[in-house]
Image (cartoon, rainbow, N blue to C red; front, side, top):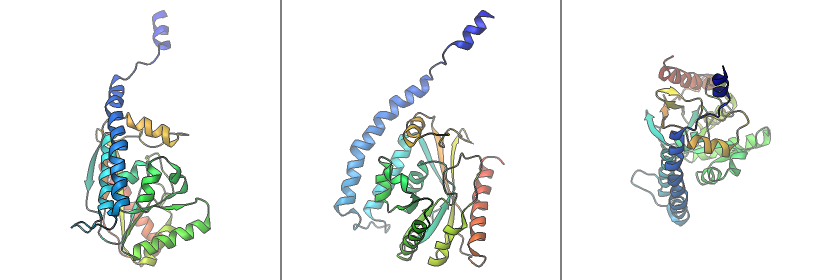
Length: 270
C-alpha cells in the first residue's frame, strides 16, 4: 500500500521524445524565421509581385507558398494533397481546426483569406496574412461584414481567389459546425465557382485531437505546444467544384459542408 501511494504521488515522467523534437525543431524554426523570412520579405518588396513565372503565378506568391510549406515541415507535418485546387477566380470554403489551416492551404495555392481581425495582431502569422491579401473582419460588426463581402467580390471579379471558413471560428475537430450561408452570397454575386476543401491532421492515420486550441489556450501557447507534437500528416482535400447556384446560398452552404463531412468520415473510417 505504501509503495502504491508513493507511485501515485510521484511526478510524471518527462517525455524524452518531445524534448528531442523541441531540440531538433527549435533551431529549424529559428533558421526559417531569421534566414528564410527576410528573403521572402526581400522578394515581396523588390518587385516580386510584378514578376510572373511560367505558371502564371507571381514570384511573391510562389515565395509565400514555399515559405508556408516550409513552416509546416518545420513543425513536423507531412503535406498530403488530394485533388487539385481550381484555377482562376474561385471561392474556397474549408472546415477550420487551427491557425495552421491558413499555412496549409497557402502551401498549395495562393488565395486571399477572410479572417478575424485579431489575427492581424498575431506575431508573424498576422504579417504573412497581410502580405497574402487577407481581408480582416471585425466579428459582430454588420458594417464590417458588408465591407468584407464587397472586397471579396471585387477580388474575385479581378480573377483572384478567396478562401473562407464558414463555421465562423475554429472547432475541436470532433464535428464540422454549421456553415453560415451568408458568406456564400459572395460567390453568387461574383458568379464564380465554389470549391469545398476538407482539412485533416492525422496521427497514425487518425485525427489528432491535440492539434486544435484547447479551452482558454492562447495562440502563443498553442504554437509552442504544437511544435512539440509528434510527426503527423497534414491533409488538404480539394473536392468537387460547385457551380449550381439555382437553389440559393443556403443549399450551396449545406452541399459544401456535406461533402467536407463525408470526406472526413471516409478517411476517419466512418
